[in-house]
Length: 324
Ligand code: NAD
Image 1: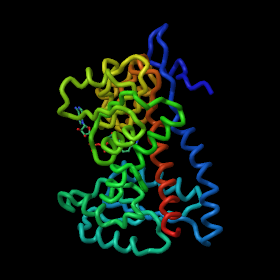
Image 2: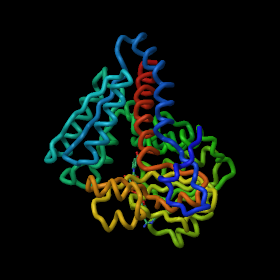
Image 3: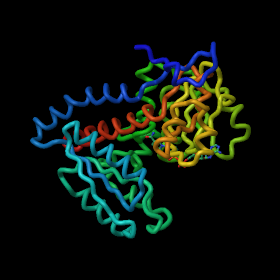
């Protein structure tokens, strides 16, 4: 399959080669087809499908979309998926009580609490809720038990986004052993588990963050560069060693013309999309990186679909582990 960007998707000038496109949508479809027999076997053996309970608190437009996509994908695969809503004014105790109820439900094998929780729940609420999950149902891999198992290289349930990135790297045959991987971002849900997973594949790993000195120079030493920052177009071509593989985890919604013009060149499809719709998605990686990188994930259609495929896979794994 020719995965190179089509000429109208590239922002390169004449004579410049566009990076190979790492197609997360196709990879996710392949993963779902591999999981299908496991779901069928589970249903046949246990007379019920693997079940996922998703907790959504408050009104957060991006979370609504993420949750809808996760539930849709898990249900379409033949699993049971149910949404449990808490109001924006719900208390931490109410969230904890809901988690306790879901922990006790026999038909719910996986529980996912969509982040962020409403600010009104107080500082540290998210960690309190993750701590309250039954670790065997923690499909996001955020419970300290699952984090500890990952650190010790005997993982059970691993955070879906970094796990999805690793699946893509493996299936696209990107070499990791002995290579230098740089992860920009040190969050508990993406940056840190990503760094651990790369380390466990024998990469030499550097974690960069907002206090890293001379970040572009550090990033330029990477054979594999992972951007998980949450700043549109932050990683520009001067961050990238020619031929490096770049994984763009960022999902940023741009709603102002200034942001769109900074990130996307004149004549690009993204500018046209913004003119029509009033908003557009951008990754943490600037499109100019296409001209330097050897391989690059698009946004959308890169890491996002893989995250959702890993929610499905972790749900099935949790179900299988619970009954075995
Ligand atoms: P976060 O805000 O928790 O962490 C961001 C990290 O970036 C921090 O560790 C911080 O140190 C670092 N950072 C911030 N500013 C920086 C700077 N100027 N220089 C260097 N480092 C800097 O975010 P997160 O939850 O890890 O998510 C990161 C991005 O990934 C967001 O855009 C988020 O929407 C996206 N995301 C995507 C998926 C997916 O499925 N594709 C899943 C989760 C998160």
